[in-house]
Length: 230
Image (tube, rainbow, N blue to C red; front, side, top):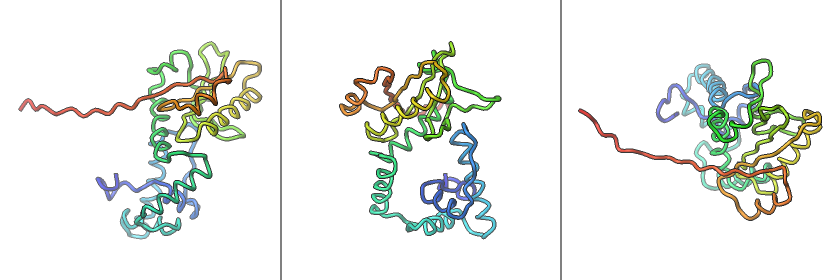
């Protein structure tokens, strides 16, 4: 977006977020906010900095990189260092999958009633606000927390987001334990892991977990030739 609209839209990535946090300028997000709403808040801060210091958003992106301790023009070694840091912190296997599946999370929320999950489960609202997405717990944020339409079962949904099988299964079990203790009040708690494909490690990790199911997804991107009627 910066390339297409260099006067309007800044870059929100790891280095700009790190820099804004160091400057105590990173905006607060409400629980359940969409990715687009979050980006608009970050972009507002970036544009305020652009106007305050009379610089372009391109220049600001370079400055963010310097503040974050990176070159404004990342090299491959910088990218490898970033991947290594993500692996150590989150057990990520592929950082690029993390970004792709974050968008999938937003897509599921936006199209909930059209999905297979939405036929049986519904999203959770509190005082009119959606709280299902990135549901806050004492042990982390659940990607999506839903409840079946009969009100008898909670469903903890985690997207693999590039994590190892052990990491994602352990996280689902931890969240299920929290929901069982803090919310369920005797109701059932199930888990669902959504992945692009199933490998042997994940299959074995879930082989004895009768309350955790697996779903796969496929991204279908198609370009069609435009035929003009003119």
